[in-house]
Length: 337
Ligand code: NAD
Ligand code: DAU
Image (tube, rainbow, N blue to C red; front, side, top):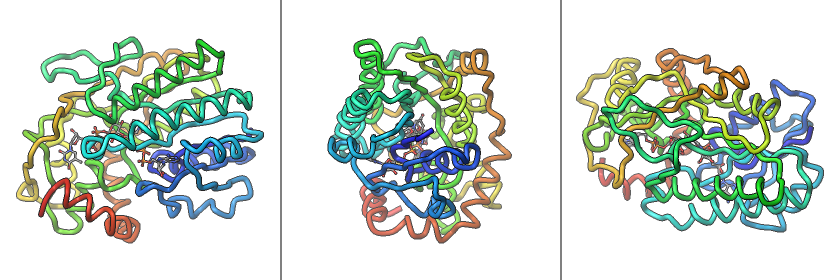
C-alpha cells in the first residue's frame, strides 16, 4: 500500500507515521507537511533513513503540490490542520484556509486520482459543549454545534468530506476523537504546557475555575483505532474514538501532574478564561467497539505518568520548540506568566 499522511510532522501525525512503519513495514508512507510552527521533523528522526518513508514539504492548499504528491497513492490519512483553539481565537483566518479550503483541495485531488480510501481525522469539538451536571456523551448521531473558530473549521471539513462521499462517491471514512496526549505534543496544549512549565520552575495557567472536563485518549490508542478503520471501517461511516477517563476536570489533571513531579498546588495560577470555553466533552466509543472490536488499552494515570517521564527525559526536544515564535505566542496569550 502507498499511504499519504498529511500533517505527519505534527503531534498525532508523527506518532501515526512511527506506528504505521512499525506495524506495516511493507507499506510506503509519504508524509506531506507544510512544517508550520507545529510541524517538527525531529519527531521522525528514527525513520528518516527508512526506504519506505518519504517526507515531502508542501501545503495542502496548493493544488499543484497536492496533485504531484498524490501520484500512485491508494490511501490518505488526513491529519494536517491548524489545531489549537486559543490560536483560532486570536486569528481564525488560517484555520478556515487550511482546515476547510485545504481539505477541499485534497478531496478533489483524491477524486481525480481515484484513491481507494480518504480517511479524515476530526474532533469531538464539532459537537459543541456538554453540561457538567449531565451524564450524556457525544456519539456519531450527535448534532454538530461547533462553538470556536477551530471547531467550526473542523466541522466545515467534516461536512465537505461527507459531501464528497454522497455526491461523487469518494470512498471516505471519518473519525472524531477526544483530547490526545503523549509524546511529541506541542507545548501549547494543556498537558505538555503544564509539564514543561513545571519542569522550568514556572506556574501552570489554569483557565477560569479549572472545572472544565475533557476526555483523554492516549495517542497510540488513537493510531490503533485509525488502523482498524482503514482495514475494516465501512465507507461513508463516522467513528467516535475516546479514552478511558470518566469526567476528570482540568484541576484534577493538574494535580496528577503535580504529584508526578513532586510539586504542590502553589504552582497553579488561575488566569482569565478562554472565550466561549466548552464546559465538558465526553465521548461514547460503543460503535467502534461493537463494529470493529476497538477499545482503548492505555489507562490515564499510568500513561500520564509515562508522558511526564517522556517530557522529563526529552528536555532538548521541548526546549528547542519553546523559543522564537512560541515565546511571542506565549506572551500574547498569557502576558508575563
Ligand atoms: P498539530 O498542530 O500537532 O499538527 C498539525 C500538523 O499539520 C503540523 O505538522 C503542521 O505543520 C501541519 N500543517 C498545518 N497546516 C498545514 C498545511 N496547510 N499543509 C500541510 N500541512 C499542514 O496537530 P495534532 O494535534 O497532531 O492534530 C492532528 C489532527 O487531529 C488535526 O486534524 C486535529 O484537528 C485532529 N485532532 C487533534 C486532537 C488532539 O487532541 N491533538 C484531538 C482531536 C482531533
Ligand atoms: O477535544 C479534541 C480537541 O482537543 C482537539 O480537536 C484540539 O485540536 C486539541 O487542541 C484539544 O482542544 P482543547 O481546547 O480541549 O485542548 P487544550 O489542550 O487547548 O485545552 C484542554 C483544556 O485545558 C481546556 O479546557 C482548556 C484548558 N487549558 C488549556 C490551556 C492551553 C487551561 O486551563 N490552560 C491552558 O493554558
